[in-house]
Length: 67
Image (cartoon, rainbow, N blue to C red; front, side, top):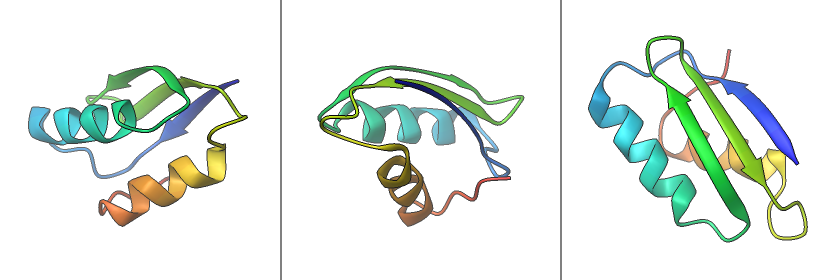
């Protein structure tokens, strides 16, 4: 599966690194590409292990909000 998640409060390279590290640690995440300047996270995942709702929950738990 592939998803494009738009996040409103990515402010710095530190935010990009935090998101990349957290998503990379999740089982089922195959790849992610984060465009900090656009506030977009492109993610490829195996929905057997993780789903889009869990990804949103993970990002929200980290303090990021989708737009």
